[in-house]
Length: 215
Image (cartoon, rainbow, N blue to C red; front, side, top):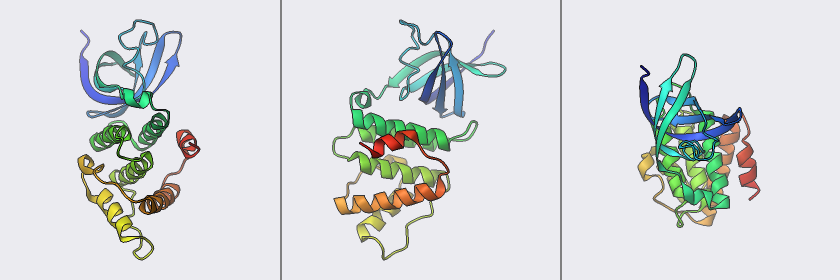
C-alpha cells in the first residue's frame, strides 16, 4: 500500500514532461525545496492542471518513490490570481520565485523563506505599497535569512530614514515587514543598497530580474 505525505508549500516553477505530465519545483514547510512529477497535469480537466502552476500555494499530497516524488492531490488555498492579472506585479512575483529557488535547498528548514515568499507576494497585490519597495525588502530579508546580509551600511552616507528602514528590515519578523512606506529619496537609496549587496553576494543573474529592470 502506498503511503502518502501531506505537505504545505508553493510551486516555484513548472516545466512540461512528455505529452501530458509536468515536473514542478516546490518550496515546502516540511521538506524544504523538492521536485515532483505530476502525471497527466497538462490534460484538460485534470485536477492538477491549475494546482501545479507557479504561485499556487496550499496543501499537496505526494508519494515518495525510490528516486522521486509524485503529486497525487492538491488543495490550493491561494493562486495569487491578482498577480496573474497584473503584468508588472506578475514579473516581480516571478523574480521572487526565481530568487527563492536560488536560495533554498532540499531537506533544509525553509519555513521562514516560505513565509517571506508568501507575505511578499501578498504585498505585491497591496495597492498602497510600491512594487519597488516590496522588491528591496524581499531581497534584503532573503539575504538576512540566508546569513549573507552584512548589516546596515556605514553611517553618514545615507539618510537616517534609510538607515532605520534597513535596520527594521534586518530585525523585524516576516509578518511585520510590509508595514511601512518611504519617500522617493529613501526608496532610491534602498535600491542602491539592495543592488550593491545583490551584486556582491549573489553569484548569478536572474532572467526575470532583467525583465523587471526594463519595466
